Image (cartoon, rainbow, N blue to C red; front, side, top):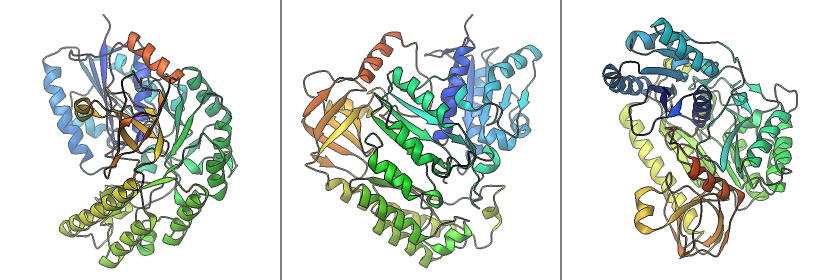
Length: 489
């Protein structure tokens, strides 16, 4: 009898990408996505970066354990960063878990599941280095017209707040030819948009001995016929070079969008974080990006309340936010992560102070984002139409709007008009309204172009056997997750 599965994903886009690989592996091993019935297998792909990540996991495990008790033969697997960090702790706290696997050996999951079934005991396998590059594994994408493409894994930085390097390992780069071959195969399959993915994506090439490799890769993507949109996430300011800015500006299918973590606007705090850039360098990058691409939308990550952060430090962060005019920002309250140097620093900021600063920052970010969005009212934008089953939700259904992503990755709810518009198609429409986190177009669309991507989406509806709980909406380019745009790097 065919076994069914469900994948539950927590954390960053790297985890989402890994979950697509896990789903592909399981289907290659004969599993099928669970529909409405209780799955035979639940896989938790975990994050260790966010506060209370372990409490969230064990709470959810406890719920699934009660379901497992009523369904003999059901299995539970835990992978990802928290599994890499906690190892045997998981099976001690949750003895009903069948398999624990790490970030370096996701390809082992089917074998470990079978071994656990035969031996009737938990299997724990954690490797300290990468066994197989994840992109060589089978995959099941959540979107038929947009895809993640991993160009590197791991991180060589030593930020004091971040546990990722110890869980993902040192940076390992894929060969450019392998990356481009994957992109070409995706395009042949109907994909029109790819997001190049790495822990510090613009450090790509360090292992290959070519400091200009990332800019070259962007330009090479521009030569792939049928590839309409290229994005990347997340770059590190210390590695951001002018050749990359030139490649972005001069390659038509590289989108005018940049997500570049700031973390703090205070040089003193950046030094304590071991962020190897300072305020002026960060602002200089933004200035040069906007000089080359005036319409670029720039987004960021900011941590509030890092140990020792003073009122003056925080005011400097607000100043950088005002000067940078971010299209949006993912803001986080600092929380100590066990195993990181920052967790043991003196002068931890009181929770009440952190909360007050966080609220002020969030209000400023929203105010600026709304101002920037209002400036787009009346402008014509090109949208890649999203899948309505995964984007927009109830509100779009009530207003009869569809949702798409503009070239700068802004979310737009638009009036599709009387004729059918498919996910993956491209429309042009005029912006009629704005909010802090999205744009609105209530006028009928100006143009509509049917695409191969729309054809692929249409064909997928006829062969779909169910959905996979990847924890991400299928909006144009695989979007940055609301709760974790990256690993805060």
